[in-house]
Image 1: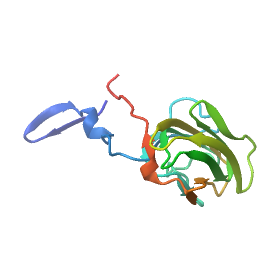
Image 2 (image 1 turned 120 degrees about the vertical axis):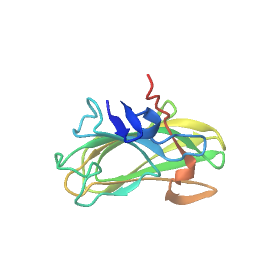
Image 3 (image 1 turned 135 degrees about the horizontal axis):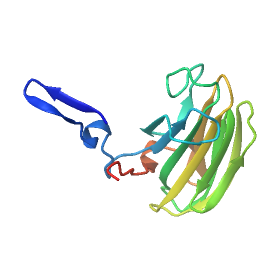
Length: 173
């Protein structure tokens, strides 16, 4: 537990609301839980809202520390399509990745590799938010990950942050 005090305030535990950003109805992106291992095991070293899923970490890592050359992240939240259609989701990654939308495993690329694109298809309904889970394991010294989509009325592009909604985490429990 962290505490604070000042000349005019006695020492007290810092309220959770002061430590974590509020996630409201206008917050976009996905909740990223970053692990200092390749198995998404244990407590995450970092949890944050990533405003979009379009990363090229280069020679660094998302934890800005000297962690092993491989690490993993689980992004969770919801995705919302602008039009009703069958979407092609494409993961461009250096590493391994799975992408689940609703109950469907859309992308299952369990082999670590140099950067490549892997795609899958999923029907989506305009304006309907559905759960999305992305599991990514870095592939070594120059990790990168992008989630793209395309449909008949949607040009191929990185999924916009305003179509992604983070998982709301209750820090009071």
